[in-house]
Length: 117
Picture 1: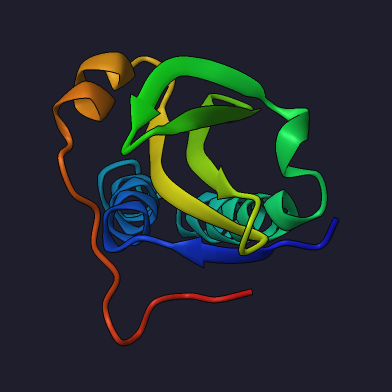
Picture 2: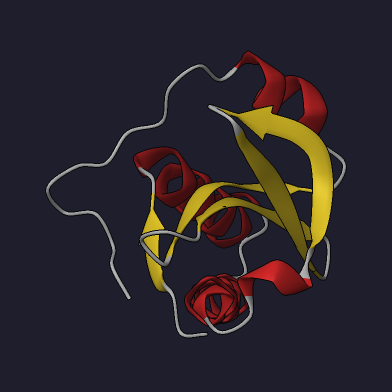
């Protein structure tokens, strides 16, 4: 399919928070770097087959939020089939109350530095 992948500020913050925690709190910079590269790869690859992953059961602005599992991390995104774009909304640990986090979000943001693939 090769959809364009756009990443929200919230998802970027999520990734950096996860990486920072592993680097600083767990004192494992190598694992932090691996996680960053692996999550980056998983996010970029969403454009290839975005419909492949399951429905989270939550909707955002009329779109179904899909959930891709990568190890103990969950990548949440919506698909705009008209524009052939995937919007990554959040990247969370599987033990977090992700349903509550996604339910309470009313708006996601894109900065000028938004990541595009």
